[in-house]
Image (cartoon, rainbow, N blue to C red):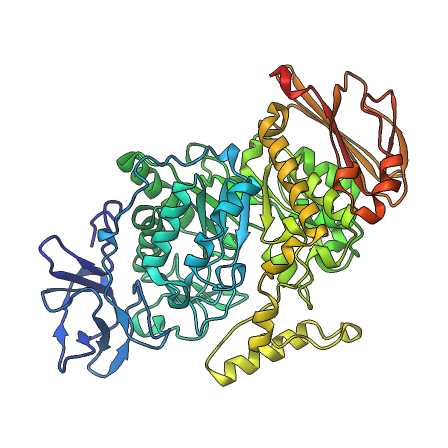
Amino acid sequence: MHESPVSQRSLGLTFQENGTARVVVWAPLADTVDLVLCDQSGGIRLEKQPFGYWETTTPQLKPGDRYRFRLNGTMMRPDPASLSQPEGVHGPSEAVDTTHFQWTDQHWTNHNLEQYILYELHTGTFTPEGTFAGIIQKLDYLKGLGISVIEIMPVAQFPGSRNWGYDGVYPFAVQNSYGGPRGLQQLVDACHQKGLAVVLDVVYNHFGPEGNYFPDFGPYLTSKYCTPWGDAVNFDDAWCDGVRRYFLENALMWFRDFHIDALRLDAVHAIKDFSPTHILQDIREQLDQLMATTGRRHYLIIENDLNDPRFLDPLTQRGYGMDAQWTDEFHHALRVSAGEKRKGYYSDFNGIDHLTKSYQDAYVFDGQFSAHRNRFFGRKASTQPGRQFIVFSQNHDQVGNRMLGERTSQLVSVEMQKLLAGAVLVSPYLPLLFMGEEWSAPHPFLYFVSHTDPALAEAVRQGRRQEFGDFHAQGDVPDPVAEETFQQSKLQWDLIAGQLHQTLLRYYQALIALRKAHPALHHLNRQQLQVVADEKRQTIQLYRWHGEHHVLCVLNFAKEPQSLPLLAGEHGEKLFDSADPQWQLQATSDASGDKATASSPTEILVIQPESLVIYGTPLTDR
């Protein structure tokens, strides 16, 4: 099979213009493959094709029908490229025709990457409904917040109805309890109508454990490498071409058939591929072809723990051509600056100095010795523009991988929450918010699953207990399989009317609006930046400019007021102050109001504890 996957999906089941169904499955080690419809006896024999593929065309299959493959005359299995699993990971696949959806986004244009302000959400816990339709009801709220992009945690079919999404076992199938493939298309279409782009999180580094029937079809995995999940996905071992095609088609499907604007590829450092052309390069090349064909613009965003700018370098410079990456080191340095204990992966970070380095260089470790890793680590990312780095003060990993899943709202003061938001939003990088942080949602975001295999469920419980075995003083590890754990993780939207939550929400809205309006903030030129740390005072001064516009952002992480000499130059007028009375609760507004900084600073600034002040050219001068 050498046909190009750019114009249309070829794997799995597709419907042709005359209504017949074309069925293609990769099973290189099978002797026979039959298509079995659930409401019929017998089966339809597939014909063997070169390179391990089996194929047939039949008028017997219609949209909505359910089917399985029978391997070697006995083994009944769902379609590896199934688009829908309405009865879960162990049930039959459903025939779906994605081409007949009535899109209304013909005039939609994806934002420039520099304009991305991302909002990460989990479909099952973002709304009471836990569905794509529930998200649609919140789009006006998200638009009012000022974000431009929603980033959806993985939706590939997983066991049961409760999961972060990283245990998905059918990469092409959209989780049935969320609304299935049609529900996702409706959500994307609605987002585009509201001017919101959509990023979808996908997992190409492993398959989930329950419902993983892929080895019955062929060598999707290889023991050549070991990963945190066991054998690696087979991108460069015997029979790897079929696996590579599988994931290439998957990536293109989201862009072409679901109009997804960008993919966020999970933990690409766990993708093992020593082929002459890395799978990420292949995806880049195929996506470039698709964009040339459709005229639409899409992006590839990665999670990567290697501090290697080769992933971001263009193909013409022998790079992998990824558009942007999550930058965990900014988060780690920021959290230590805010008082996080230096344990685990935080042990490498010293706070203010490393946060300053991340503002300047994106990577904190770009060749230095890492005590946590016990080796020299990283390489400088000196030529990559700011739009290639995504920063945050929290995300699903950093919240949910805590034993008790505490959000920042439960760990630091309200003033520090405001400072953390400011530190992210004044950076020369793309900011990402985690659902609910903008109104200081108090409930945890815990790790949860709903495995139906009792042995696997118990193994997950034991694994969590062992992981946090040294944290007995904090109490028992929440049971990841319990329904209660999932329910506790849902956003409680009825709380948002409270004074604290309304104040934080208005604060985020104002700060996002300032970032979008001021040229020195929304232009992400890393060369037009000066940053100075004062370790003793626990302050950072971040000076950014674009043309004649400039801003001076002063951040105080100390718990006391600090008097500090400002960077030399014109500072303009005060544009924003997190200690301003309008961002205080009534109980503290009087005290804070008395201490408000002057609107035109002299060479010495007195800045309030755990606060952010921004000076700059007034917006009316634009």
